Length: 144
Length: 144
DNA sequence: TTTGCGAATGATAATCATTATCATTCGCAA
DNA sequence: TTGCGAATGATAATGATTATCATTCGCAAA
Image (cartoon, rainbow over all chains, first blue to last red; front, top):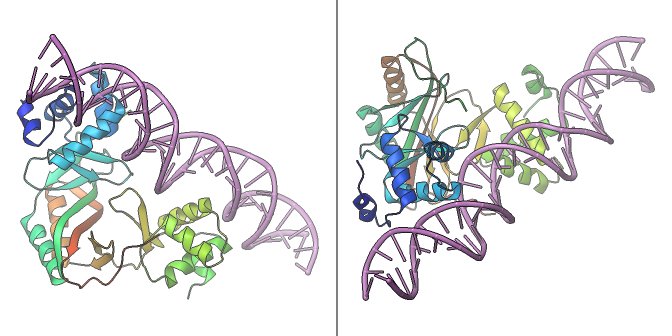
């Protein structure tokens, strides 16, 4: 579960909207949620939180390190709980589901590529866009 | 140089705005241009092309395979000439300059990661966000 | 070379995601 | 319990991109 301490620890006042958003991410079946997703899910569960607040809270959580923001294709950004351990993503073009992976080789090669060019890696994003060939991907596209 | 045949070959009628946009990408010093960049550069060179047309032409060129679209952080997308050969990008967080690279190891590992999970890779994007440590990066941020 | 039609263009309105504004309300420490 | 500054929420504003639609253009047929 989440405690208000989580918020205090990152310098954020413990408020109702913040606790609800954090709780949502901890209980939601889908790890990756857009601001719109969060807003609608909260409304659906009877929690009345303003859209502006959702955007604000998501940004604050990102800055505080509680959430990680991703810029997938399509313009809108999605957030997920920061598990501490970095990972990249495979996005299914058919059903929209996101699967996570971590590959040490890829990570180290990136470091090498950057340092070879005199860059200090600050961050990186790797998204593999693929099709599920088999009936393997059971997740359905997010219908609206 | 560019010939109208380029456009014909991809099923696009040869028009003045399209030729101008294509020409711009072939002659511009900066490979990566946003729609806004293209629009302003054309205006600056005395070519009067509507902003809506710029967006349309860029999308058509992308679909035709002449350009590749990238979704960098920040919301707006940038385009570059499709050289045929795939590559990834290092984006300098300080000056905004984009450097390209290709690493066979990273490429093959991505294939492996995807196939291991039953995915058929359709596409991927890898952006390394870094700081130029040395005075190595001579490119200045795009001032407006 | 002129003609005609459907595609392309451009000015602008509309849309979508996100951020800014600002009056009201709330968290929390004294 | 009280008070103040931070947080909230309704809404306006912004920035990027797309849709609309009347006018214009490319190009092929005559």
